[in-house]
Image 1 (cartoon, rainbow, N blue to C red):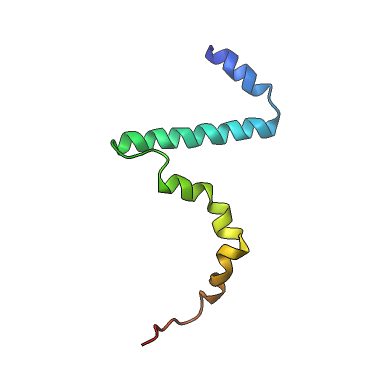
Image 2: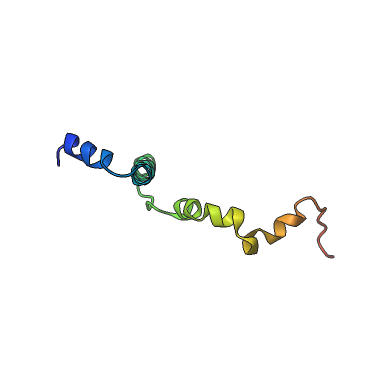
Length: 78
């Protein structure tokens, strides 16, 4: 597909879908860039998985329960 046709198709999408397309392309470009910077590494590794779950890590009460203890002093049991 020619670039102009592709651009027209994307511009015809609703704003939210255009934004999702932009996010997808940016993610894809980052992965390609990382693959070129680190040849031999597996694309879509742990960092990509962590990024995909970032919202859960920050907001899921089952995953954030222990952050209430962040200000507490910790002493290992002896």
